[in-house]
Length: 208
Image 1 (cartoon, rainbow, N blue to C red):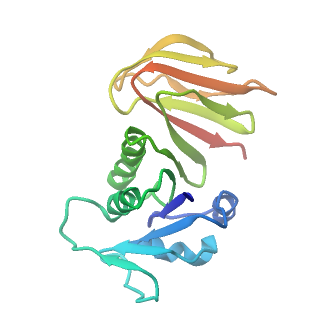
Image 2: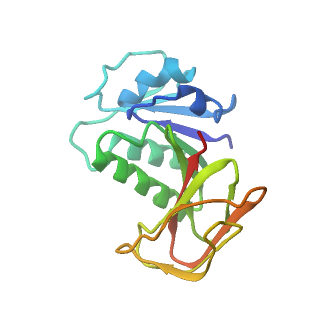
């Protein structure tokens, strides 16, 4: 299936950087105030989801799911679950990082949910690309200025980092001690990260 792009309402300052990552065959889901990004991203949503507490329902001739304001799932989480139910397995989340910290952390946890479901998923903001490292290796190109590994789901063991300024062999990262911040890819190389047990959040920081 095509990739599903979930668009949230967090601010986007560099629309040009996000547009470079979008494809003509992507399926776009705007979540409530994510509708404000339509023009900046140059997209027409395929699905609109929201309780419309932060953006007026535009009543477009587009499939729209109106949600109650009082619910367990945020509009973004509901949108992801709806996309999963429709069979999507490849996700890109934009407009989900920044602004309110509680929403940002909740949206980062969506990456964990999608990883657990066996899906490919990434989140983009103005500065970085976020992915989960779990069962398979992850790679970072030297076009990125820095990369960090954060434990957000419990202890991670057997961590190996190669082709980086600060290599690691059979390391362990706990939620209480995050020491893999601002590593750098060796020039002309691709850093490779693997983890034997647990999961890590990989943050690739764009080179300015």
